[in-house]
Image (cartoon, rainbow, N blue to C red; front, side):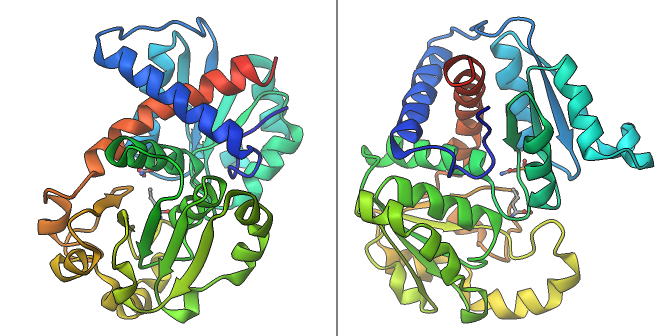
Length: 309
Ligand code: CP
Ligand code: NVA
C-alpha cells in the first residue's frame, strides 16, 4: 500500500510524474474542463486535528472535481475524542472510504494510521512534514522558472519546521541547492544525512547558514511563520530568535530581481515577511495556493489509480 507521509516514499521519477500530472490537471482546469470525474463515487475522509484553509479546501475541491465525495471530520466529532484508538478508527474508515487525508499534531499518528490502514493515507501536515505543500511549491517554481531541476532555493527563518523539511526533501529529489538560513539552534544535520543518497544521485546540495547574505543569486526565497501550530508556548523566544531572518525589501535586494518569493501561507504579515514583499511583483504566493488544488488531484489519482491497484 502506497501512502504519502513524507515524500521519501516516492522516487525522484515518481515526484516528476506527480508534477507532470498536476500540470496536466491545471491546463484542463484552465481551459474550462472543470469536472474530470476520474474517481466517481470514491470517498475521501479528511481528518483534521488543526485548523486549515488551503489544505482543507484544496483537498475538498480536488476531490469534488474528480467526482469523489470528501467527508471532513475532527477528533471531537469522532469517538477518538472519547478515547477510541487511531488503530480502531483507521481500520473502520478503511471499510468505508478509498483514502484518508489527515492533519495531525504528532507525525507518529500518521505512521500509526499507515500501519493499520488498508487505504492510502495522505499527510495533510504534521509537526514534521508537509509534503502536499512541497509538491505545490515545486510546481510553482517549475512554472515560474521554466525548469524543475537544479534550482537554488533559500529558506529563511524556522529552518526546522515541517514546510522547510518538506521543501528540502523535494529539493533533494530534484537536484536543487537548498540553503537553510536561520539560527544555529535550529539546524538539523540528521536531515541532511538522511538525504545523502538522494543528493548524490541527483547532484543536489543542502546546507545551513546563519547569514542572510546567503540569499544572493537564488531562484526562490521562501519563508514560513515563526510559530507553527502546536509551538505557541515558545512564541516569545522564537520571535526573538528569528527576528533577524525576516524577509523584507533588503533581503529581496540581496537575493536579486530574478528571485521569486514563496510562502506556504497563512502569513503573519510584518513578522516573517513584510507587506511589500508578499504583495510585491516577485511574490508567487497565490500561485502556490492555487497549485495546492492541482497537485492534490495528482496525489489522489496517483495513489488511487496508478500505484495502489
Ligand atoms: N499552506 C497550508 O497548508 O495552509 P493551511 O494551513 O491553510 O491549510
Ligand atoms: N509551519 C506551519 C505551516 C502551516 C501551513 C505550521 O505548521 O503551522
